[in-house]
Length: 325
Image 1 (tube, rainbow, N blue to C red):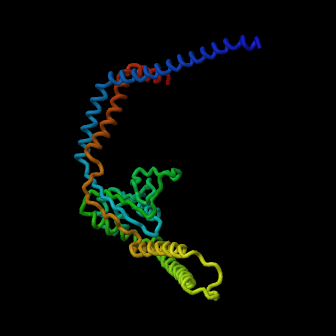
Image 2: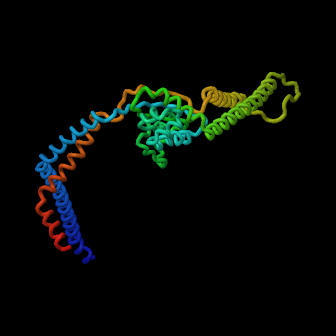
Image 3: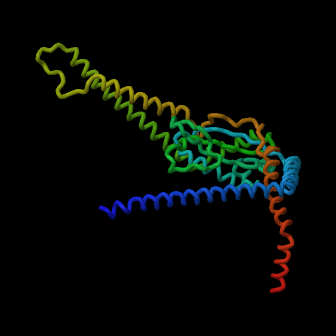
């Protein structure tokens, strides 16, 4: 007991000293990080002439390139693929973008002339992402960063967003017609559409038969309730409660109406929800090009400033390396 009591104060002092040293080391680490950030900031200020001059040059280069380059305008369409898997339709549309640099091949796919196909800058189809889990797209996955492992977001089935970029807005009507022909004339998509249509029609017949059976049971139940009790047995066996009949019938009717609605709306492989918008939005604006080139040239200016500062040392190392060879 005496030895344990004698070791306690020493142990406490050791722990205190250990914590103090850890705190001092942590403070020293924070100070070194802060000094490093300050030194970088000061160094950037010293190179501000290089950064600013190259950044201004990049700004004017971006404006100049915007002025002399042809303007591409963007139009978008939203559609429903009905019973056809939207991934098949999206992949089929995106095949057009792979031949965008071959106007003759693109023209044959869309039924356009080579001159019309040559003004098409890009064609891309995207998925809609549902976050609120209401079955409606909350945003379009333009960045294509959808993660199937993320349960907080899901792709909206049967939704397709098509985005086209054109140099000439007069080609948009012909492109729209050619795009729908390209989709509707695909044999594989046609087969999927027909199979889905036949399955839905067969399911409607099965639902009608089930509704008729439940209606018959309901009538039997009502007849039994209305028949006076005189000892005769009208129906043998146990029948469900009357409320269950109505619940089952309503659920089957709702399902049938949903399928019939789909059959009525989806008469083609792709149903337009929102047609192509007017070509008013530029794909690359003057501000975006100026900003991009300004940042790129500013970074280049920083490296040029560093090279100029250490130019003597760099040339010396180059000459020494050359003499050794």
